[in-house]
Image (cartoon, rainbow, N blue to C red):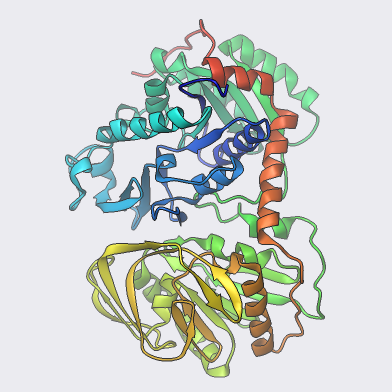
Length: 519
């Protein structure tokens, strides 16, 4: 493959959202990388509040950053040219080639009027106008890599959106990539989902549906084989693998709270606490929560129990409360007050019990917010737990800072419109600390092992817990183990020879049409 001037590829689609597209894409990337293939991930359009900043200062979905790590390559904006960050049920911020270009309604984006200053590339408010942008990004990757593994979004059979589709069959048609459809058998009805997904596509789209992959299977695969044979008889298409249900698949999904490293650690066998006590961490599940993956590194520590909470009484036994990032700081503030969580946080601070605010959570802990950008609410009083005043700027800060805190080196990344003026307290990363309340804009800082241990020691001391951080927990090593597990799933349970042929040569010719097809 390495001698090809233009790399081959594959699109991983799904019968539904959360069918396992991200898992399969990452697994194929890791499997190919282990074979010496130079491979890159690609998702034309992602909708997620979990994002990441690349080295060149571009914002992309965390799932694509994770897939790049699986492929053992540096993530770039080319791998996720369009990112939609919801701000409400009806509108999203549009991030194009790593930079925000405006807010847009769903109707305006998928077709119809709507939007505010969406930028030249989005003038007219139609998703289909971005097809040229995303295909250009894909072609650039194909010129650099032996293979590009694309991830679709939702289902390719969303016939109401097919005309403007740029992430499923639209990109497959443009690149002439074969498509493997993933189905979650744990939900039931996987054969009907495979057949129905194919039969709702146009003849031209069906030509590229090469076959299927079953995900999250429990039990004896031989019991499934008659169904796969009948499916092949009905559709003329093969099943390229049956992936078993696997605990501990800790990856950065788009917005699935139950799928990330902390959930994996909670479900799998972990080492006992090093000290006499455990630490209980409560994360406030604020509206429009973003980058909740920040707490994954805490849950990776033996003896640290992480849970998401939305009631004040759930903070009572917590040794640390985290107020995470959010796409709506003012909305999160109102939510904290309505639910009594704001008062509970104030009591904690007065009692010297630990609180950590990250990004939007840090802003909420401050004294005052001036927001004419995100919520357009104007002047809003914060919780007053940190001496910080925040002004929202039209431009977004996208950075990859490094520094030292608590005597340890630490790296992070920043994604925010709010500009914080720190008026007192002890310096803490880019923010401050007052007593046992800390605040910073830095996402990902807790992935720095030495800093995380130092921070947990501070928390344990303030909470009066005889907790001792494990001396050898390496978050980077745990992440690599998770990605190797995904590669193992593909290598051991998929027809890798057939997948490689698809990537190199495209979909088989003469695949039958399943009526009725799309209108």
